[in-house]
Length: 120
Image 1 (tube, helix red, strand yellow):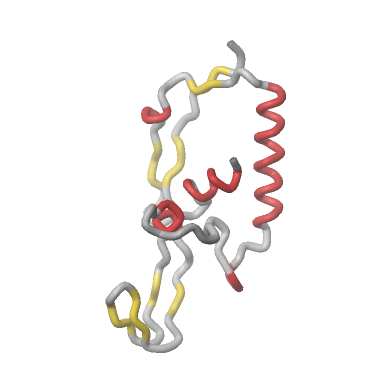
Image 2 (tube, one colour):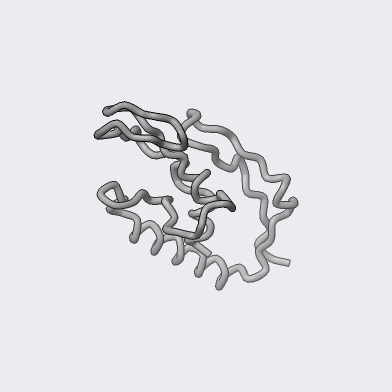
């Protein structure tokens, strides 16, 4: 559940700027050496045409977030406690009606509210 949620809604939907080291071709476009590249993590993670691979919610390779395992552990612990303490918790509005706000463009969006009822 935690990994799928992070895949669909990464903490940051884009990487920091990366730069090509040599001239390269990306999606049919020739990029010179030292060209800036911004990776759309949320787009990659949710692209149905992309074969399943590692999700990029916390980066990859040398850019993998050092706190990723702790963040995932904390999310699992919070979800476990919520399920145990509030097994009847439900959204009070349809999922499609949840409203989000964009934060600084590249930082993605966040829910403005999460209306729930904890008990039946």
